[in-house]
Amino acid sequence: MKSGKPVPSISIGTVFLRAPLVIASGTWPHQQEFWKGAVTEGIGAICTKALTLHPRSGNPGIRLWETPCGLLNSIGLQNPGIASFLEEDLPGICAGDVKVIANVAMETELETVQVLETLAEKDRGLAAVELNISCPNVDRGGMAWGSEPLQAARAVKAARAAWGGPLWVKLTPHCTDIASVAKASEEAGADALVVANTWLGMAIDTNTESPVFSRIVAGLSGPAVFPLSLRLVWEASSAVKIPVVGCGGVSSSEDAVAMMFAGASAVEIGTAHFADLACPGRVTKGILDHLSAKGYASPMELVGRGKRSGAG
Image (tube, rainbow, N blue to C red; front, side):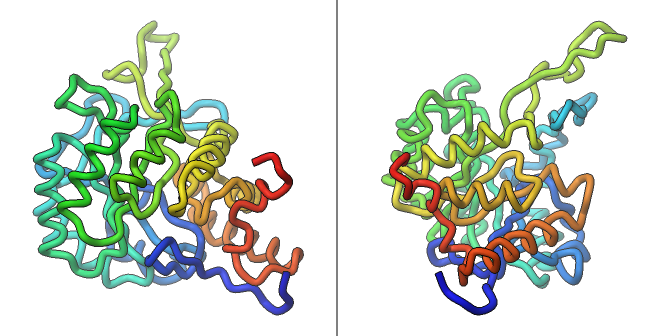
C-alpha cells in the first residue's frame, strides 16, 4: 500500500482510461453532448450501441419492462447500420472527452468481417472494438456465438483477422462453462473480455394474460443479476491472463470494488444510470474513497485481491 492521493486511471492492455468505469453498450445516447462535459464525469470510456452491417429497426412491441431490482429489455439491436454510424455519429462522439469503444454485434461471419473492415478503414480514433458474441448465430440456427468454446474461437478469429486494434470480446452468461469460453477467446486473439451480457428472462402481463415481449424472452439487467455476474467474473478471470471487464448489475462503488476484487480490471455500468445520470461519477468517487481509506494508489491494486486469501 502507498500513501498519497490515488488516481483513477487504468489500462486495459494498451487502452488507457482516465477512470475504471465504462458505459455499457446500448445504454447511452449517441448525441454529441452526452460525450463531453460534466455528464461524462467519472467515465473512462463509452461503448456505442451495437453496430451491424445493415440498418435494423429493432423488435416490435414493448421493449422495456421493469422487474424487482432489474430491467428486461428487448430492443433488438436497433441501429442505423455501419455506414450511417460512420457518417452521422462517429465524428461527433470521437470529438468528446471520453474514449469510444465500438460495440459490434456478431451476426453472420461475413457481415461481421465487413463491419470490422469498414471500421478499420474509416477509424477516427476508436479506443477498441467490443465484439458481442452473445448475439444469435444465424449460421447455426440462432445459437449464441459465445455459448461454447469452438464457436467463440471461430468468431474471435474472424474478427481478429479483420480488426488490428484492441479487441474486447463480450461473453454471454448462457454457456455451460464460462472459463472454457474465456480461454478459447483469449487463444483466438482477444485482448480483453467483457463478462458478461444480460441474462435471458421473460415477463407475462396478467391483464392481457400473455407474454409481454413479442419474442417471449428478453435480456435481464440491473442489481438482481449482480451476484451472478460477480461469479462469472471470478471464474473467467481465473482462466485467462488477459484483462477482464466486469459487467452486470453494478450500481454502486461497493459493487465495482467487488468486481475488481473478483478479477476485473474495469467495470461496465448500464441500467443504474437510467435512474441517475450522475451514477457513474458517484461510483468512481466511491472507488477513489475506498482507495484512500485503504492506502492504495490506483484501482489496479484492487484487481484480484479477493483471490489472495487462497480461495481462488
